[in-house]
Amino acid sequence: MRVIRGLPASADVPVALTIGNFDGVHRGHQAMLARLIEGEEDLQLTPAVLTFDPHPRESFAPTAAPARVSSMRARLEAFRTLGVARTFVARFDARLASLTPEAFIHDVLEGALNVRWLLVGDDFRFGKGRGGNLALLRATSRQFSVEGMRTIAIDDERASSSAVRAALAAGDLPHASALLGRPFSISGRVSHGHKLGRSLGFPTANLPLRHKPPLAGIFAVRVRGLDGGPKTGVASLGVRPTIESDGRPLLEVFIFDFDQPIYGRRIAVDFLHKLRDEARYDDLDALTTQIHTDAQQARAYFAAQDTHAR
Image (tube, rainbow, N blue to C red; front, side, top):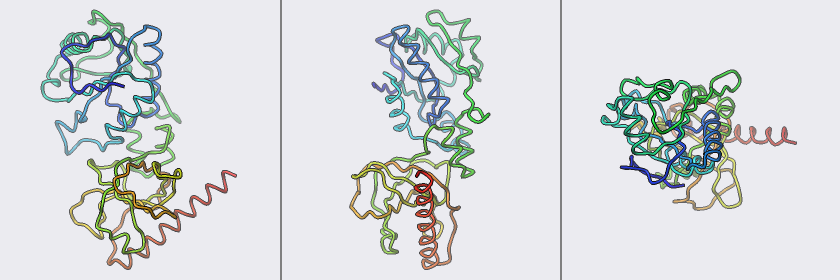
């Protein structure tokens, strides 16, 4: 897959395009991308995505912006896996936000991207003041046809990034997994920490986070990307109130029955079951006792899953 940062002056090939932030690439997004691939095969066009980084609300109201369900890297990996050939990553800045719907159609879709077939959700809004909609696209476009994608519902709920965020914030990981079509996951490179976990008897793989995560607490997790296949463990995701006071989020993972140096390795952590909320303890002894309990509960969870699988 070819990734183009920013909008080109003009595209070199005609494309079948879909547009969106695609945060989480949930099952609604997956259905849209599957339809995109079907459309490009029928029309013999290059399948492409126009997405935005950062999220529009991160640009104009950063304190009110929603927590990210997935990183841009994770989104791009999902696009590639699903068959997208090109992704245009545009910065949603004041210039782009000020375009009228008609200018967005003629200058961006037709001029810069050479769109010949466009797939959007039936509630898609675009242009200055979100003034453009599906009807305007169909009435105004001069070189491309437009298809509206129906809403995808999971357990009678519309599949959306907002619904995924709500499930994660509530600690309802099974529902989040149903909406995503997979467990919620965070990926990153293992970094050096303060080695406090090792001194307490629980060495952890630390993944610093660039953005506020959509959930917090203590979790039973599965770790992918290590030699020998997936490992199980227990993870803390939050601001470590007993240890730190700066409020920076950190993901710490204690991997069961594993003791190898993995600094710099890229791993993926799948969140399978929430054990409890994050809490502040009076001293390190109390924290250590709680970590022992968390690890026991996580092991019990995986043992129960193994029994159920049999």
